Amino acid sequence: MSLTLATTTPGEPEIFASLQGEGPSAGRPSVFVRLSRCNLACRWCDTAYTWRFIGDPRPHRDDMTFERSENQITLDVREVAMRVLALRPTRLVLTGGEPLLQGPALARLVHELKEAIPALQVEIETNGSVPPPHALSVLVDQFNVSPKLSHSGNAENLALVPDLLRDWAADQKAWFKFVVASEDDLAEVAELQALYRIVPERLFVMPEGTGSAALRERSKWLAQAALTHGWRFSDRLHIHLYGDTRGT
Ligand code: SF4
Image (cartoon, rainbow, N blue to C red):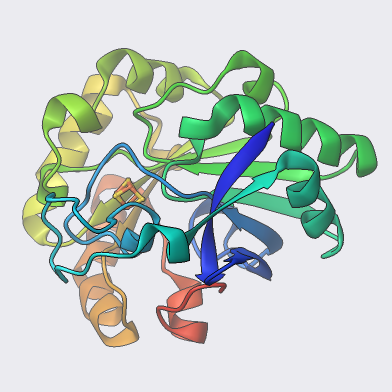
């Protein structure tokens, strides 16, 4: 069984140790595995190298396309597990792209890792539009669910799947994280919160941006909105620390 990962440089899988930069685990030392491919195509995606390969016509604000062979690598699950274990993880973050497109292989990976390190905490970053297989759900400690709003440019029927959003909202392992670019997006967050009865304590709003200056500017009004609605606020710590770079 194999996994298709993103790369830091051609041939080198994007597996790295860093601090979790976003959401409920922000600041925690973690080992990251970045999976390649995504079922969505956000205009402002900061990991377009996981999906926007040459020939993909879906729009992106930077209008860059990537050579698939240089930006993807397929490895046996055991090889991925060995590379993760070499970094001596206490927390694993499976991110992407959309990791749940490879759910069965991730279940195998997490099973192997938890056999080796029973106390390992595992979280998955997902856009919330792909269901996790049961074999994976039972092994995962935390889902960071980031449904995409209309400013992402995705068709609503692809980005927001009502049955899944209801399931995520009822799942005690799931936290919601909405990427917000402008104050116009806030009404949409409030609407989804009400529709799916998302507990405010489990709902993060996070500014969109791939530079510290833009994040700080947007944080000013977003922090106020979080106070008004009782939501939680998430920064993007890794951007402030390392900039918008692979492997961080
Ligand atoms: S869902 Fe995530 S990985 Fe996929 S295009 Fe949107 S931001 Fe990028």
